[in-house]
Amino acid sequence: MREGIVMDKPEFVYSIYIQTSAEKLYHALTDPELIKIYMGGYGPDSTWEPGTPVRWKMDPDGEFEEVGQRVLEAEPGKRLSYTWHTLQPMHRQMFDFASDEEWERAVRERSKVAFDIEPAGEPELGIKLTLTHDGFDSPDSRMLEGVSGGWVAILSTLKTLLEGGKFLDEPA
Image (cartoon, rainbow, N blue to C red; front, side):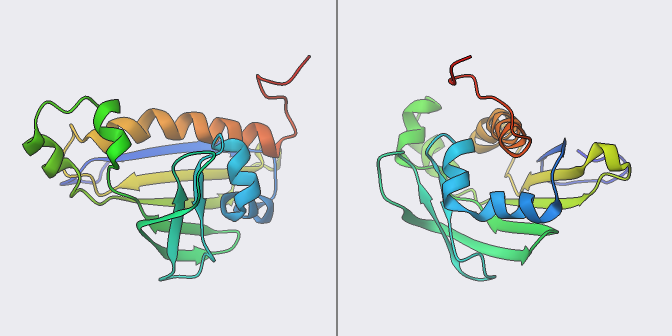
């Protein structure tokens, strides 16, 4: 929760500094080939125009699927925002839902994610990327639980990719 703001719904906010340009960062957020690298073969694809679908690849070997996501904002080099998919059948086992009622309630939750790109203020810090994933129904949202750890790992890998670093699975 951001300091000084009263919120009625929880959100996940994470900022990371990346040594790159705003244009390269935005390109990495929207290019399916780059997304495949830092999201481990999963991820979204779209024309990235406001109102257009964001199709999602839920399986690295699968096809992109329509899961109800839509681009909300797309300002190259500055901001990208889209609605997030609801929980999918594969998530039921992953999150170990106790009852059908709990599952039915959870799959109705519709959140959204926004990527804000800005200069870090100090040239040596590069670009500041702030991810805000919000719109969760409650603090114990299963989707919030899943994205909280997931986004940190994804953005760390994105940083490594853009800064020309080495990935763990690469030989020394």
